[in-house]
Image (cartoon, helix red, strand yellow):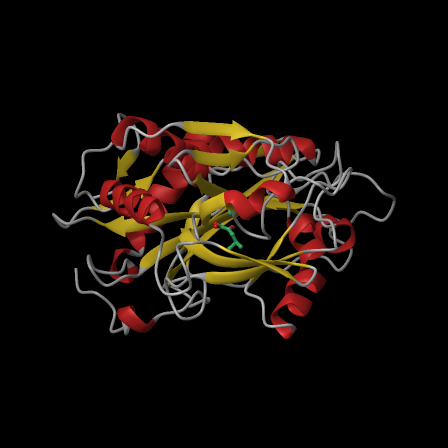
Amino acid sequence: MEKKNIDWSNLGFGYIPTEYRYVSNYKNGTWDEGALTTDSTVVINECAGVLQYAQTVFEGLKAYTTEDGRIVTFRPDLNAARLESSALRLEMPAFPQDRFVDAVTQLVKANAAYVPPYGSGATLYIRPYIFGTNPVIGVKPADEYQFRVFCTPVGPYFKGGVRPLTIRVCDFDRAAPHGTGHIKAGLNYAMSLHAIVTAHQEGYDENMYLDAATRTKVEETGGANFLFVTKDNKVVTPKSPTILPSITRRSLVHVAKEYLGLEVEEREIYVSELKDMAECGLCGTAAVISPVGKIVDHGTEICFPSGMSQMGPITKKLYDTLTGIQMGRLEAPEGWIHVIE
Ligand code: PLP
Ligand code: COI
């Protein structure tokens, strides 16, 4: 199979349409059998539930070319399970988890020419989502839905590639106690748009959201969880019922303990502790692990000893081990790598 003529090494994180997408529709209480299509447009009624009341949930995962030339995805079963919990929270029908993995597999296989080559620094980002399609004008769930998966080749999420970021402690909240912060719903991201636009205007790469109830604890950013390293090399990551249960973070906790022999704490982290941390990183499918060099808390700069020119040493080890597993350079734990072809 011949790869598309794309400048893989200079890709940013943007949308480039590929040839195929997967679609299944839900009507009268069941999902149809689903199929690949080349049609990248969605035609829905002007009053569709997704347009009026933001009834949409999504996922994000990647396909990688491994060192030995296979195409694989990373823990797609966990994305399938999380999409189900997101859907149920918004009163949407779950898409069967085995069918989710099958749809992703079919999609990636059909678009194999768009999977970036090994060593290019790019990957194929896969975006599964479900949205309400039939007219809804009173506030209630839709009766009809579409499950769709498209994919797009991507480079690094943050402009300039892997470089230490500067983030600010944000005065806006992303998620309410007992709200929807723990699911991957479009509405959470709409909430964050004003905050990210103003952060960029002020020269920051991202926002650090705090817990909305007390505004004393670290939650996450608009698109990634946090990981910190203490001065005695412990990996510490926030535990909160209002953040997204990141698959990357859960994987890194395992990698830190089982591959690197590090002590890991998943616990509440207070803003007041940040000044004592040695390293900080953002972790997620899109972010992979993006190092943070500086956090600005209302004019007070917290500069991590790892500096603004490179990743901290433990963050680097975590990054190398995780990407080594994803790209087939290191042996993966049982069930983590799903081979497409
Ligand atoms: N937190 C938020 C708000 C996200 O959007 C994402 C991205 O999916 C993550 C964390 C990281 O999750 P994952 O590692 O499963 O991609
Ligand atoms: C992902 O990492 O898959 C996400 O959905 C984050 C988003 C900000 C691109």
